[in-house]
Amino acid sequence: YEVVSAVKKADVSLAKAAEPIEVRRLDDILYFASDELGGLPLPEAVFDTALLERVGRRTLENRVYEDWFSTLPFDIWASFISQHPAMQTGQPQEINLKVLVAFSKHYTSIESTSAKRRFVELLPVDAPCVPYEGGFGRPSDMYLASSDLSAFEGCGQFYKVSEGLVKAGVSETFLQAFLTNFHRRLIQPLGYPQMEQ
Image 1 (cartoon, one colour):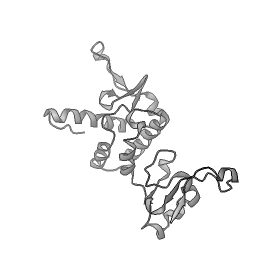
Image 2: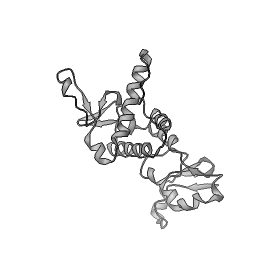
Image 3: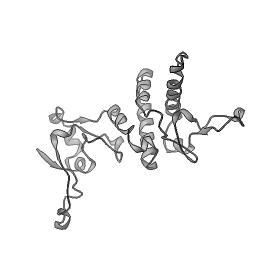
Image 4: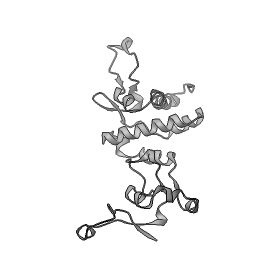
């Protein structure tokens, strides 16, 4: 079976019909995205937004199709998006912010501490993806916006996470775990004992 995935509207005019369209095979599509990932980049094995709107999420959630399609697991999406330019360079900024908000919401929804730690370990490996006033920094170089660094004045340059992250919906609890994860990765190879959270 083949499906046309780049249809913008059901009433496509003849002029628009001449535009090239992407044809995808249904056996190449394994997942559909949850609402929380709306407007974010998705792996190729996921129904694209236009096709999902035409087919309907409720249709795909029907038990009849559960052997064919399932909701995209968040950890698969997190691994995918961690390699996306938005999480490797911080660009485009709008996507970067939406991704960090999605990460934060997912982190908050996880109940066990060990599952939260495993999730954070999936995230980008020290790429400049955390916004601060003036640019993007590596998680290992960042401090929480609420950190009091006055005792270290004159000792170097310290970057605090942009206060806009918290205003946008990224929790400080997630940010602390995200930033701490990279500090732990840096300290562990040096032979220091693992820090408990």
